Image 1 (cartoon, helix red, strand yellow):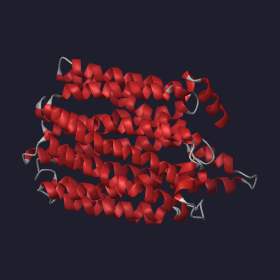
Image 2 (cartoon, helix red, strand yellow):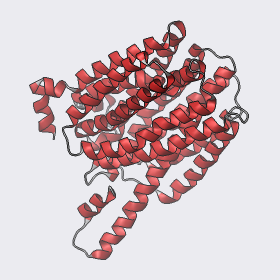
Image 3 (cartoon, one colour):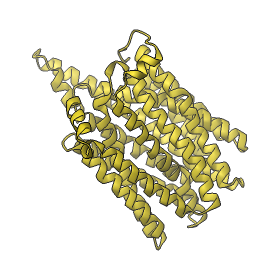
Image 4 (cartoon, rainbow, N blue to C red):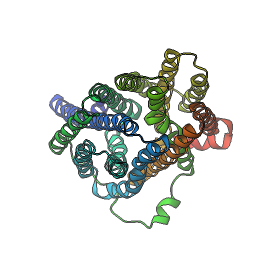
Length: 415
């Protein structure tokens, strides 16, 4: 497993007992955090499957559904930078606990919501508490990977998260017929609350890495310029992939291909199911290959997939291409973080990772509104063309270190 490398790095010649104890400690920490991350993904996928279907059944248009869903990203943006900076000073565990408890309460309240205003407010709250976790989870993974093997550890965490998210999608689709997914949301709330108790007992308190409060302008001025390019990459990817996968494609399958709620849930679960082994395999590959070329290849595959989605002659072909795109996007979700990790400063990792995540939330929010209106005014085909164009632009930005020697030299220097 990925924590074996950490054990080897920590071995100091003190004997087998030291290694064995360290191994058990790393094992508990890694498994505990991975399962907690997975349960949060489980709950998030339940909500993101049930709520768009419920809003559609309540007569809401694509535009209104997009606006309500964009509230998640707004909540994410509001909290991430603040929590990311505070986690550098105060540690991460207490923020993980508050995130789990908050998500449990929001899920329970969503089970009773039926008005547009209630959906919008609660989805914003969902974004806030999910944003708290996302703002600190990257730092926690970096701490676990301090001895090396970031790709393997990150891939393993993402893989388990995808598996549990797929379970969440299946459960929400199958249980939607019972009071429009109310029971699925209650199950989600119970599991998240139970996991908060588990996290309190099982996760270790992380060490703080920053003791002084630097001026904001000084912090941002010292950020590596390549991080700003990754901010743009994250923004573009979230602008298209976020809304397409969270509600545009599910609504297309529900209203155009006439899938039942159960079939929609199964399809979105298949997305997570194929992504799970992809994350694991990609995590191991990116530790060994040229990660820039890896990212460019799969960004271009996703761009081509967008065109094939437009031309799909049958629902089966559409689903097949959709799953291929899911695999390629999952590869970039591992490859891009692996590439940018070399530019992040450990003393401000919480803030810099949160900045990247904020750009993703901003892209998701704008994308949900823009693509929702594009789908409502035109057709789903225009959304697919936007997906293709966006990923071509991303491939060019990711290839910049290879295309321009000065950037490539800077990359090698950083490594």
